[in-house]
Length: 287
Ligand SMILES: [Zn+2]
Image (tube, rainbow, N blue to C red; front, side, top):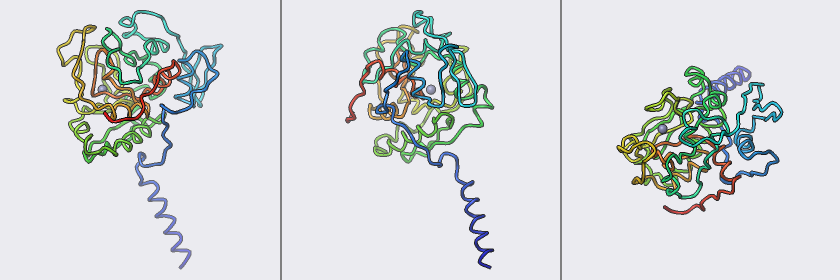
């Protein structure tokens, strides 16, 4: 009888283990604003990629990034073209042409085409996160925004994206009442689509981006601005929200010339690159 009972205890433990949704599994998030950036790798942008994605290694003689399964991608360096020309066809190195500002700096974005992170080498994202809609879809995980809103973002579990977003959302719980409006009426998360007005796949296609409140974020195309001549805008997103997201690896579209204030995107390599370039993280403080 005792053996029989023990059997059922084991069965229920297994059932419980498999019933727990993937996003509730433990993971160890990293803080990219404090993570050690000591490295022997050069140049800085390759070092930043290796620090952000520790499962990769770089074969400098063949200019290849290689993952743990042996999949590889050819690494083409920066082309030095004008930023406006980089955007439609960025090489991997071109992604680092403009360092993402880590400070509370909205003045840099007044420079036309100052869009750090907006240049994406599509093959790199396919390599990291999945090459088509089905491939990405099988790795999507639901992350609750919290703040009592019931909002859920669907993001990629590959390379820690969901883990990092979950950590950011947990950290933002400390200020849940004030931040709740930003997580209502959200623009979404995973969506296999092209960027408006272009043929390029959006970061949302790879399950690495979220859009918070559409009305509070603001988007340059909806503002009536002309491409390359966007100018000032009225930012409504609290800096504490932005900085918490950055801490866990998400850059903010509000720092772009072509501003997209609702948009956050998992780009730890850009945050680490800025730090390697001497960028200083703002001390944690109130808005
Ligand atoms: Zn977006």
